[in-house]
Length: 145
Image: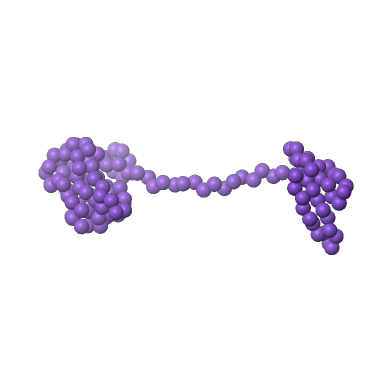
């Protein structure tokens, strides 16, 4: 199988592994054959875990699905999916939109991305202007009932 040369305290050893089954190895050391028990430790691999940022969908508070008592009912925020620059705003305050309507066009990673509505309702507020730079998670448009 494999041959090795060892020098231990000035003595040369020619070692050849003849056979290996489970944890017993048959080795030849300078012409003499030995049965050697190999102690195996199972090592746990430390595979890194990928942690993805939590995706926050529109419709109420960021931390819970229910609205707070003093909060406006039926309001949803459309947020930037990734950092970029606003190229064109396709809607105005007061416009009625449906799910899937394009609200604005944003350039991110050298690509133009259509930012679509994920809620039906009226545009309450547009929080960005053309050529604004936005970060991931920034609120772009507020949609209400």
